[in-house]
Image 1 (cartoon, one colour):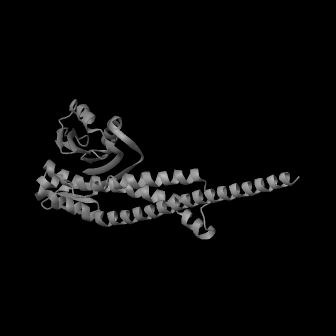
Image 2 (cartoon, rainbow, N blue to C red):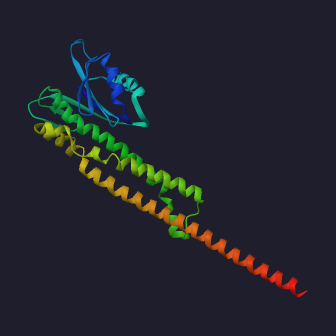
Length: 268
């Protein structure tokens, strides 16, 4: 069976989403996560049900649905997305049921059919695709600004206007803030405060998807953005100071010229 995690937006409007889902599904809420059951389209047995979990930070995890149903679910979600992503982040797995929980070679083995067990796995999968969005954003920003340190090293200054520098600082600030404000999403979810017996499943996914190392790399890249931000701020201050210095110099020149002109006319 198919298990897929998607990140489609910065966040979902859960209040409106609940109202919409209740018209067609039975909705269960686990803190900031919504769950619904969907009749599976695969096979002739229509009593087989799939599960979908909606996470408030713009991710969803589908269990037992086919691609067509997943696309339909994403289409339904669009009205409730806040800041939709241009490029959806996804991760696809196969899963089946067994005696021991395991994840290997993109195959998940669930120890039972309980909803909370799937939710424990889903927390790790949803965080991974959200982390993927952060990684892509930071990589793109660093790529767009990587020439700035080279220009500074070669020319001693950044040949950009004050307006361009402000725009670039704004972009860096937005990207850096978007990650910092959601950094808590990459910690162990509060769900496991009440279900500590399920945390081992979450840890299993986090270890397989290398979450700890990826978060560490992400934080290092955020430090690079901070250095770029500081460099641009210093360049902006330098341009401002340079403009003030030239303004003062020209004022002094004008004052000297006025004195010379006054002395000449006074002499005659």
